[in-house]
Length: 379
Image (cartoon, rainbow, N blue to C red):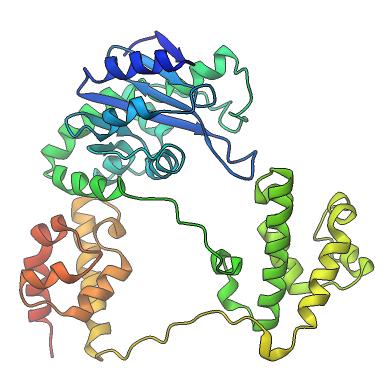
């Protein structure tokens, strides 16, 4: 662990850093983005640390991070993140960076049975360190960044190398190292969902419970919010919150008086968007019934009456096993995976491999138990 922080703002500095990092076997990584301040979020800082150095790379000054790609793709160098899902997606979206040999310390903590797995409680528990989170919600795209913000950003990584070593030993001791290794390998392949021309309501929570008329109102409001956010370069929630949209769909005000009376929007929002919102709602209300959008629904396939019994039996077994291992039950088997297993009713280990969600560690560790469990069930 070192107090020296290298601030990288040039291509020559980045190449020198990449060369230095390539000498290490473990590199800790973190990033800061500006999702709370802009329509299209971007990586604004990339923090990297080894036992010898700590560096903060400024992608706004050095937008081409290609010199770091060999580092991230080198299977001989372990890349340590804490809660890496967002970071992996962001690095691939902005720089096409792919990561081999990922170790996620947050995921490791969950498999070790930790109740609180955020970085702050973990560092407090393991090292007695308290992180100052005062800059957590700042706009990281602003320049110049003050020295204390850069040090704040770097601090999240300086403990990760040591933390990873401690957690690795604990995983090996509990014989769960291969579990986390496989989960990290799968996690390293997550990507941002591609943009498409599908209706926006498909990604809006609760849309599936709306009738077709309200679905049309919802889509109109979502499209409007998206246009305004893009034009103003602001995140969607800063234009109009999802709860406000839900309430507008439920109330469907069609004039300024009813819009104000509903008290869904602030006076400023009504002043800026009120007329547009009313027109959107009126337009949706005038759409002929035959032309209204319809939420796509999959008809559930007919299932064997024995499947629910197998699910119930499997859930009871899983919950007991999770208590024994002192970890969160869904970490062992999710509801959807248990339903798939119950439907397949495997009688030999090879039958598990056809289930998309099934991991090798789950088959090797618990496959025989599950087969025996189903065989012993009363007919």
